[in-house]
Amino acid sequence: MVNLYFQPDAQLTTQDRMVLDILQKDNERHQKHRGNKQQAAEESDESGEKHTRFDSASPEGMPLSTHCPDFSLPPLDAQEVEEQALALMKELNNPTSDQFEPTVFVTVDYPNITNPLLRKYFIEPYVRWGRSVVRVDTDVVMLTHLLLYLTTSIPSAVYLFYNFHWWHGPLHSVMQLYYMGSYTLMMHQHIHMRGILNKAYSLVDLAFPYVMDPLMGHTWNSYYFHHVKHHHVEGNGPNDLSSTIRYQRDDAWHFLHYLGRFYFLIWFDLPRYFLRTRKPDLALKAGGSELASYAFLYTMFAYFDARATFFVFLLPLAIMRLGMMIGNWGQHAFVDESEPDSDFRSSITVIDVASNRYCFNDGYHTSHHLNPMRHWRDHPIAFLAQKSTYSSEHALVFYNIDYLMITFSLLSKNYEHLARCLVPMGEQMDLSLEERAEMLRSKTRQFSEEEIAAKWGKQFAKLK
Image (tube, rainbow, N blue to C red):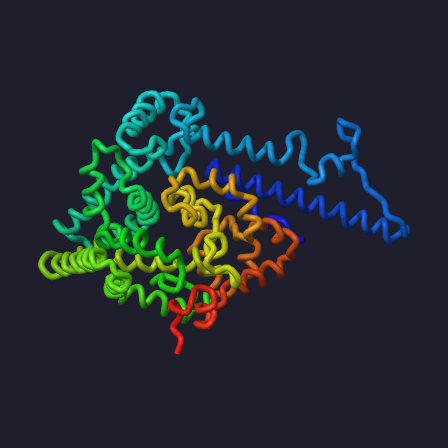
């Protein structure tokens, strides 16, 4: 039986630290309880008689093993600790609370900006204005990002078309690569909540994706149609164009097939899916948006500046689609063989810096599938409130690893590393490292068409 292997990243968000600390304490209590049971059994075997081990007396005069059977750590029991953590998280999200903390930057938390002059003359006035601009008070960071792109991405792109230099092109693409993750998950909030800005700024909210999406490697509206209108409807099931169930998820050739189909056929497959499901209006909109994007890219390449078009639009598009498929593979690589249609058992939770600090709690993917409309700051709260359900449903939680590294670890079949990154819950706590690795391996197996017919229905299977 093993505990957490790595020191948690020092840059974890406050909420992630609370969640991971509670999960780690659960593991410690479980190990202590199991160790005490094993010791009692050994003492019984040695003497031929059964003995009860008492560590100390409780305040009521009862032995600790009876008064506190889960071996909770003093002074508060586990339930009280979790309730306090939940209450604090809710206060941090509550604009009327004295403990309210908006997210202003992804690199530094609001309370950690301690310079009094900086806070008085810049940060606090900016936060007050930002809260009046964004739709949700916590989301000042999204205004920060829009201003960042307005003052860096757009001027850099315009200048490349005005006066191209070979040194500038690659530097621009590197800058955009750094921005892509945060921008995409900001847009993830945008497409689910139908905007991120106050209604008074609805025109800006509507317009900025048409400017920024091509610069960040997205085609117009494709993220909305594929993710909201398709992926969340099918939920990684057999009809999901990004489903992983028909692939062996630790096979590089299977991943390349998965990637290639999305790269070259999504423009055709998505409208065809909407037609097949009797949604011709969505088929027309999805296909029209994709073809309009390609027409725009061709025009910029053929009639303006091919070199600038490559670095400003085409290279980001290639990188983004690669990144999205690597990420989705990692998010849905582990699918339970007995209940593959369960959100708890077909997606995962990741507690790491890249996913949650820089990408707006994207690591809480199970929580997102359980409620796609849930605000990103509410995911740690929902996870902690449903922790017992996650445990009983055998959900998978990882830490100190992101979706990209999960995919790379799978394709290199490095299950030992994945097992070390697992935060065990429930019955998983009793598994050795080797047993955890084998458990993870069993959940990456390709589903046969017969299994798909048995689990989802014959209408979803491609039976001969």
